[in-house]
Image (tube, rainbow, N blue to C red; front, side, top):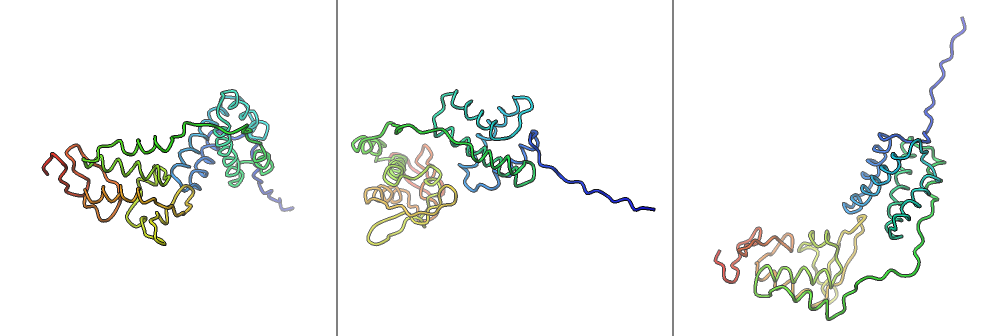
Length: 243
């Protein structure tokens, strides 16, 4: 008797992804990101694309469809930077889908070649002048504990250009003296990038005023302040309030 040869089943990559496939690829994208801000941005961009993709019947996940999605975003009058961020998330989604065998590598390569929106000219914003920035950080009350903290926070944001997440995670180990000037060292930003930020003397002075008022000597620099002037983790006597 002739032996029947068993044919091996070959898994063919799909040209149209279902909702479970998209969810699996989205999870792979989010796991590969380290920054919480990047995860939040990519999650929203991918969810918007999935909603648009599933609203159209029988769409194949290819270069043409992603180009149509870019046109859809342009018709919503979104800024070129916003469109490019969302397209970057879609490209990453295609890459992860191809890497896990859910999408053909040729289709994924075509999606990665989709051009982003053109940025024409320079986008203008509301920039603060030196006088306006000085008035802003001097606005909080210097005679209260909360005012000293708010002054220090505004000074660090304006003078050092830190992001909100970096400001919250700022601790005593970051502030060091380097070559006769103060700096914020080993600061971990988006994507795990580590950098050193110079700190002007006036910024260091506002931080010292806050620390001297609260007697904080370790851990995070900025803490929560209640209405009575108490600082989380310390016992502080604020002006006009007894602890």
